[in-house]
Length: 301
Ligand SMILES: [Zn+2]
Image 1 (cartoon, rainbow, N blue to C red):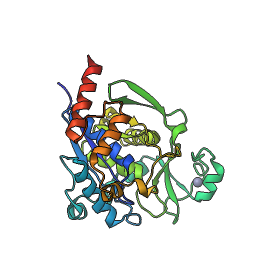
Image 2: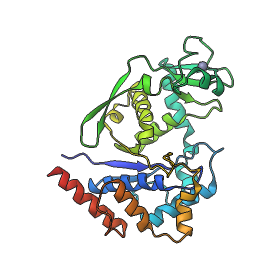
Image 3: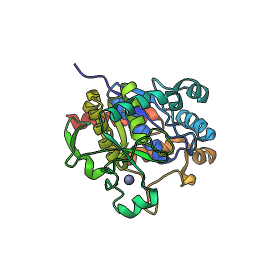
Image 4: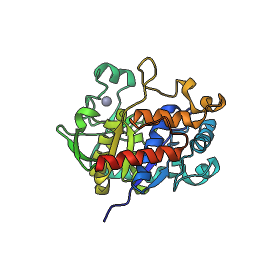
């Protein structure tokens, strides 16, 4: 029996969506469509200090503009705030954190951001506070998880190959509870994916280390189902200067494309080019889906 596939798109409403987000959403949609799977919309709104209501509205506007349909998740801002918001689910994240604490995976870290930058040119925290026995009850600290040396984790790729990631080298002892007492991204992402039954995760190559972190967390929490998820880490769209696109490049936001009366065809063709699909005849999202399916079937035969 073929396993049923469920994936998700997970925008963060801290700024307007850009063409890099669109590529990720479209690739996820194409994969789900070609595998007759389901798509969930998750909005990463747990950090209320970064949340912008206009950006929440923008998500729904642009998904509609692109013609991306999903099977579960909020249908609009009101439903997000009343039913799906991560801010309604803090207890759920803290239950998981409590298990990690109980099982002695966590320690308190009082290093400031600037100190960590100094100590770790590779951006990997060197474990400075690991053996200091600082009380977890202390104020103004972060809680980190101890990732032992030589932590190798396997994960499945789309085509059922196995890749290995060395978690201690790729992310090190990462943050579980932030200085502002909010649960950190890794635990939120994992717990939401578990709750939503996600088994296909499509994200940029820049989040490979996060995949390792979440696999490690799942193992610590004995949520082994996550360890059989499939992962796709795709290329990132660069701007003309070769920099990764992010929300600070507002001029490439979908909102601006929209306002300049671009047709979504432009985005579909850009996506097709990145995926090495023939793009001249693509006008609608259905053309893009068709072209993707043909390419996949060719590869299989
Ligand atoms: Zn520290």
